Image (cartoon, rainbow, N blue to C red; front, top):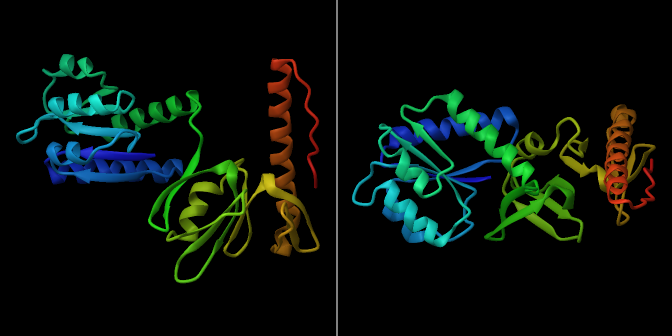
Length: 261
């Protein structure tokens, strides 16, 4: 999730950015934050769909938050706008530009966390595809989790991310950061060995210290954890099978799936 904070108070930006980083850490989410000290600067370079959420102060310089919001809406009718202010008097105007929320300063962590929880639920309800966002070869990439086959440590603090088409992205991101985002209970990803993560959906079998992947690649696994890895992959595939069967029963279809392993 990409978030922009627009506020002429560096202290207020620092506070909100810290809250958002704490939230991302506790929820194990991938959130990036861009900071803007003036509405003029933001509006001049904004293009539609650049961000998921914009936190916007109302009282700023020559171009205030409400004026900026109207200009943003001309470019992007779907962007989520959240106003921040020391006063309650502009609440009506804020909702006039279809603001999602109106937060009074000083912001509280409890209030910010509640808004973020609501936004995450909204994204899930609207079918937003969970994706890993990164920059590779000077391009911004949003790669759906379901398309990630293997992530492994490369050279010079880079990671190599292989997708289902066989494309490999060289990414300046730490292995621990990626594990914090992807490797958790029921996530669909497992750590095979030091510096190697694999997507469960692309694992064919794990035996004799080797993980066999779709496409023919064989990766070594930590033999002491081989049994646990097999169970995790089996559990994931059976969950996917049950979900597919439920979906097809609702639609009146039939599904034939092999859980493998």
